[in-house]
Image (cartoon, rainbow, N blue to C red; front, side, top):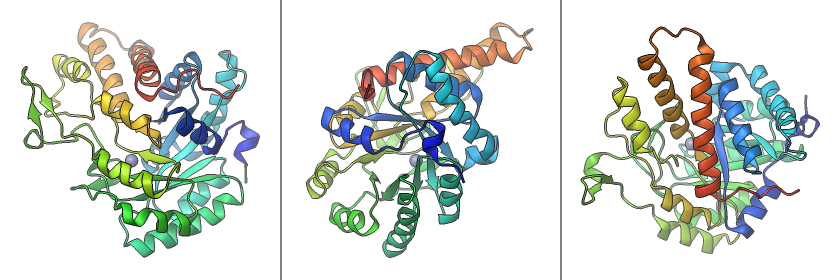
Length: 333
Ligand SMILES: [Zn+2]
C-alpha cells in the first residue's frame, strides 16, 4: 500500500476549488508512455499550470500499472528538475469500471479515481460509486462519478448515443454518493469522430460546424449544485490542420469533428473545472510521426520520430493550457 502523498502527488480538491473561483479549468491529459508524460509535464511546468495525468484501464493494460505508477512519481521529480518547486500533479484513473480496479489504483498511489457507473441503472450507479467513495476517502483520495452517458468510443468505453445528464438527479446523486466531482453529458463525446456530417451545419467555407454543447443543461445543473466541481469528458477539438497533415502524409481520417475551442473556453468559466483531452494528443503525435516517415523514409531511429511527436504534443498542450483551459500561472505557490 502506497499513499500518493508520499509520491509528491496531490488530489483534486484544492485545485478544483480554485479553478471554480477563478473561472478556469484543469486539463486532464491521458498518458500511456514516456514521451506523452514528458510532453504533459513540460507543458505544465512551462505554463506554471496544475495538471491531471490520466490513466485509462486500456493504458494500464498497454503500459503496465506498476510502470505507470512509477512514471507518475517520476513526473513529480521531473517537474522539479525542470524548475517547478511545487508542482501540482494528480494521478487519476479514467473510467474505472469496478470497485476492485479503483481500490487497486488507490492502493498503488493514485490520488484520484473515476468510478464510471453511468451505464448501470441509477440505483446501482449510486451503490457502486458510494462504495468507492467510502474506500477512497479513508486515504484522502478524490472520486469522480458520472451521470449521463457520452456517445463515442474511448478505449473500452463505447456508446452509440448521448444520454444527457438529468439535472433533476444531480443533488440526489452527489449527496448520496459523497463524490468530489461529477462528470456530465451535455454533448461532448469520445473519439475523433464526435459527430456525423449529418449532425453538423456548414459555414460559408463549407467547413463542418458541430451542434453546440447543451449549456442550458449545464446551467440547470449548476443551479442544483452551486459551486460543485463538474467534469467534461470527450473534449478534444480535433484540430483540422492536424487531420489535414495526417491525411497529407498518407493517413485516412474521415469526417473527424471535435468540440470548438471557444465552447470549451466558455465551459471553463463555469463550474466545469476538469476538461479531458485525449484524441487531440493522439492526432498531434500521429501527424508528427507520419511526416517523418514520409519525408525521411531512411530514418529508423525511434528517437527521430518520437522526439518530434513529443515536441508537437507539448506545443499543443501548452496552447490548450494557455488559451482554452486558462490554467496557466495558476499554481498555488
Ligand atoms: Zn471519458
